[in-house]
Length: 68
Image (tube, rainbow, N blue to C red):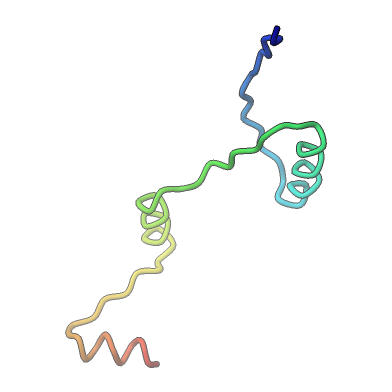
């Protein structure tokens, strides 16, 4: 007879410096960690807000910017 295991999901925000410790501890306890990743759209919006957007007038202009 198998015992029913009750599981609960928890969202935990920790500093990046503590991630390695938490990861090691979770492996030893038999827990799983799922990191929430940003979608491509979310990353693109962040790029626009941070000013990491470039424009080129033509393909030659684009190539000149890439080579510079």
